[in-house]
Length: 472
Ligand SMILES: C[S@@+](CC[C@H](N)C(=O)[O-])C[C@H]1O[C@@H](n2cnc3c(N)ncnc32)[C@H](O)[C@@H]1O
Image (tube, rainbow, N blue to C red; front, side, top):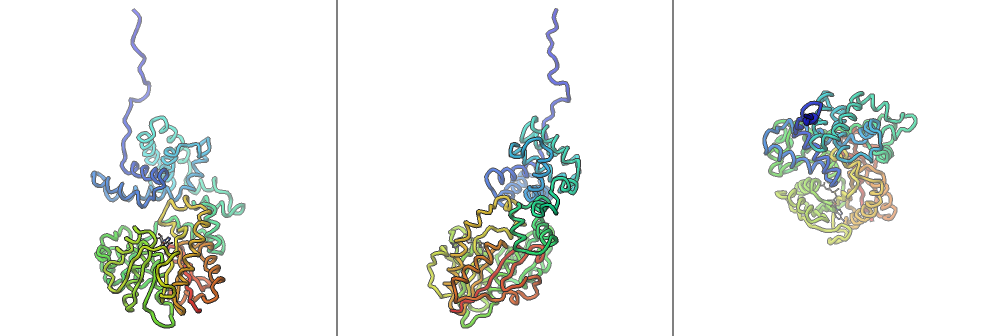
C-alpha cells in the first residue's frame, strides 16, 4: 500500500499570531496619515491617543512614547532616509511608503531613542507582521538588522558628505533639514558653522510650552502659583511649563484669562504696543488675526490704555477662533472676517497696526515636525505678492504718526527684509523704527532696526518684526 500521508506543511516553528502593540500601531497610523493625506501630526495624533486611552490599557507613558516616536521619526526623516538608503539595495522611491514608514519608525527607535536594540527590532518586525504581512516583515527585519550595526554618529560619518566638501549637504543630512532650508536659514542667520549648527539642533528639539498671562485678566504671580510652572525668559507676561506640565491643568488657561503663546509672539505684540507714537493712541488693528494669540494680548494691552482693537481675519472659521480668544477681554474690541488686501475700514484710521502675515513658517519648525519636508522653495513666490499687499494695506490703514508692525514666523529674507525694503522704496512717507530698545533685556537682536528672534538664542520661534512709522 502506498503511503498517502502528506509532508508536514512547515518545517520551522509553529505559526504565531503577531502581537499588536498599541503604541507602535498608533505611531504607524499617524505616520501614514501624514504621508498619505498630508495630515498634520499635531492634529492627527491627539484623537488617536484619546481613543486608545478610552479603550483602556493605554496610559500617559504610552501616550508620551507614541508622541515621541511620531515627532522624532518625522523630524529626523532626512537623516533616517540616508541611513535606510544605505541598507536597502534599491532606490528609496521604489520602497512602498508603508514599508518605509515602518523602517523609519524602527530606525528612530534604534538610533534616536534609548530603546534596546533587540526590543526596537522585534517591536518593528511585529508591527510589520500586523500592518504589512509576514513576507514584508522579513524585509523589515533584514534592513533593521543592518541599521542596528552602528549608532547614529557612526552612520552619520558614513552617509553625510564631509563638511569641507559640501557644508550645506553635510548639515542637511546630519541635522535632517532639506538643503534649501539649511541654505535659507544660514543666509538669514549669517556667521559660521557653530551658529547654524546650534539653530538646526534647536529645530530638532521639542519646544517648551509657554503661557501668557493676559494683562488685566491674570498675572504671572497667579500662574507661578500653579504646579509645574516656572518664570518666563523675556516677556513680563510669560511663564513656562516644566516637563510634563499641562496647559489644561492651569485654571487661568481654562477660562481664557491666560493662553498658550510662544514668547516670541508675545514680544512682537509687546514691541508694537510699546512703540512711541505722536498723537492719540485709541484705535488698534490686527489685520491677520487668526487664530488670535497676538490679538488677545494686544486687546488686553489696548484695554489698559482705553484703546480698542479691530481684529480682522480672512477665513471665517479662523475669525471664529479669534472671537473665542478675545472673549472676556475687559476693553472694547471687534472681530471681523475680512480680506486685508481689500479692507472694509477707512484708510488712515488706526494708531497701531499689526500685520502678522501668512508665511512659510520656517521659524516654527520645532512645532510642526513634518513642515520642513512639505515646504518647497516655490512657496515663497506664492506668498510674496500677498505679503506685500498686506503690508501695503497696513501702511495705508495707519494714520500719519502711527506705527505698523510687520511680522512673520519665518526668518527667510525673502519674507522679511525683502518685503519691508520693497514697500519702503514705494512709500517715501514711512521709516523704520529701531525695535531693539522696545524689547528690553532681550540679547542678540542683531544690528537692527528690525529684529529677528531665534530658537537657539532666545528659546522662541524665529519671529521677525519690523516696526514702521508713517511719516507722511
Ligand atoms: C501667521 S497667521 C497670524 C497669526 C496670528 N497673528 C496669531 O498670533 O494668532 C496669518 C493669518 O492671516 C490670515 N490671512 C491670510 N490671508 C489673509 C488676508 N488676505 N487678509 C486677512 N487675513 C489673511 C490667515 O488665514 C492666517 O490666519
